Length: 254
Image 1 (tube, one colour):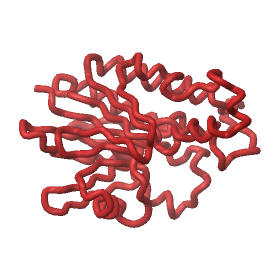
Image 2 (image 1 turned 180 degrees about the vertical axis):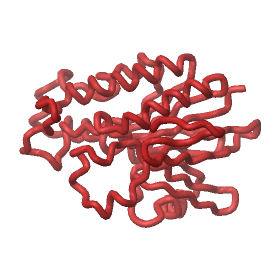
Image 3 (image 1 turned 120 degrees about the horizontal axis):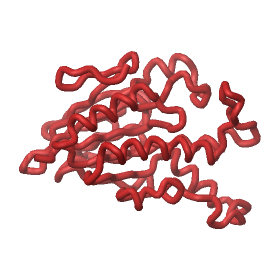
C-alpha cells in the first residue's frame, strides 16, 4: 500500500549536503513500494546568483576556480532531480516555492530585468519540473499542498525560538514546514506543527551571511508522513547528524 510521503525543504542546491542526499536517495529506493508522494517545500534551490544580498559582489568561487552563476546552479539542481526521478518513477511529486526560489520572481519584477524576456528562466522552466511530473506552486507565502486530509505542507515564514509553536499559533491548522533550518514539533490536541530542518552543507560559503551561534541551531533533517485510511497523518521527523541518519534500524548517508 502506497501511503508514505517524503517531505524535504531548504536543500539550497548547489550548497546541499551531498552525503545526506545520497542517503535520502537510498532511503527512497528502499521505501519505493510504499512511497506515495514526494513533497519539496521550498528553498530546494539557493538561487544565490539572484540574491539581492550579494548584489554588486563577484560570484562565489569554488576551490576549482569555477564561479557559481545561475547556469551552474541550475545544472547542479538538474543532477539532483535526475537522481530523484531515477528512484521515484510513478510517484506523485510536488514542488512549492520558498523565499529563495522567489528570488526569481523578485528579480523579474525589476523594470530593467524585464528586458531579459524569456531568456531569464524560472526554476520550473530551467529544470522542466512539470515535464518531470511535478505539480508546481509559486506563491511561497500563500501556497501549500495538503498531505492526506489535514496536514498542510508549505515553506514557512516563522523564525526565532520554537517556530513550530509559533506557526501553529498563527495558522491554527496542522502543518509541516522548513524555512528556519531548525527542528521542532508542537501539538495542540489533534493539531500538530512539524519544523523539519534543512538539507544544506553548513560549511558552504553561501551561508557565511550568518554567524556561528545562529548556525549552531540549524539541523539537517526531513520528514516521512504516513497517511491512514481516514486521511490523518503520522509524521516522523528524521534528524541527520554527522551526515547520517537512521530509519527502520538501518543507517543511511555518512
